[in-house]
Length: 327
Ligand code: ASP
Image (tube, rainbow, N blue to C red; front, side, top):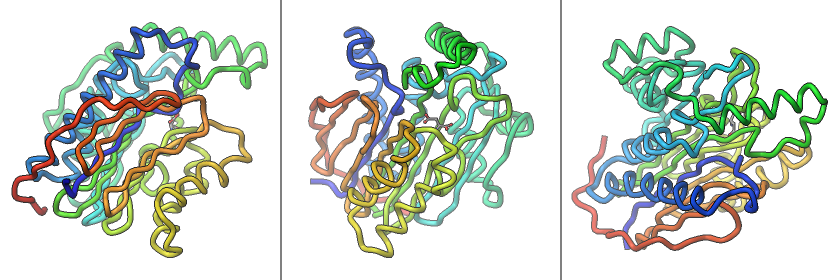
């Protein structure tokens, strides 16, 4: 048994099971497992939860299957504006970027902002420039575009013209990626990265880069990363709300997360989900859509991934940690 754990999500905007080809699912599942292995490798050698969540999110940003980085959703002008954030539960230090267009891995820029020691959030072209000045990989915006997202944009714009937005599938609408982790030193961290929702207005920023809404981590309590229509996550300050229920009401993370996702946000009729991990390494991943790309490695080192109802055991990873590193 280890005393560390990690969980990830690839967004609650998954296709209905019937529309997801077996080949695509196998590929998405492989990328989820790769993201978990990448985060787990950090934790296993005694590394920081902060580095583990960043490593896991980077893998999902590079995958075309999820709405972040390569494969991110297109906005109403057919462009990309990417948001990301990361939070260290030990120090409550956080970094976020929003509406960036050229940073290959937005979570790296969020981390650079966190590491600056004084900033929490940078937006727009200035955030792109900040990342470039720090030597992060920059790309042409077309790098982020995939045929699937172009199809989704065309579908959403057709729904808009026909007044049938409600009939749009969750997969056409949105997605996000995120990771939460507990490290061997007992520290928690969370990170989230997104393209937002398909056909979003230019300049719109959702919950993913908002600390306390789409991303939150606090040692001794929990770490949370959300997915779903961000405006509601911001209004309900979802990450912080869940942490408050755990800290002040003594609820389990599972109950607190289920309460917020399945009850508080229910009246809005929107797709929502999250992953969370508590101070003991217990993981939760509630969602109210057809499915949510997700996965976790438990404290016994078992790696699981899922898209819909069924959960797949992939492998048992080693759990021996090296000497724990504290920040
Ligand atoms: N939370 C993201 C946003 O509102 C989108 C999503 O996860 O579906 O930008």
